[in-house]
Image 1 (cartoon, rainbow, N blue to C red):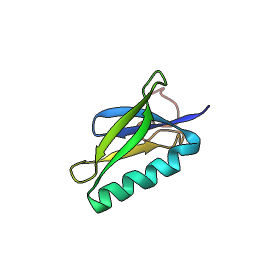
Image 2 (image 1 turned 60 degrees about the horizontal axis):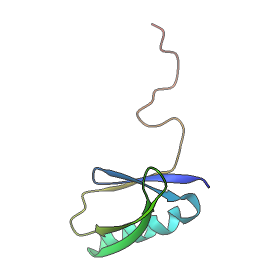
Image 3 (image 1 turned 90 degrees about the vertical axis):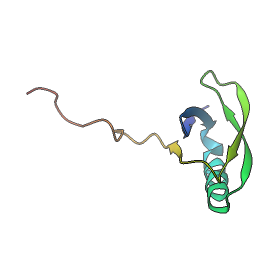
Length: 80
């Protein structure tokens, strides 16, 4: 099954692509309302874990939607 990457603070997790929108909504609500939520996410080797997310203190949460090219990648030739 396809997955998307989620970065919360400095930690990276994964979520099944079909659940990504729900997780994004939950993260946004937690940050907007300043509350803590439980998220079921996946580790790098696809093991499920429960992550406690404190929306009141979290500086950021990023969901990588898989857009190509990545913001850190520059399209075009590398030749000078």
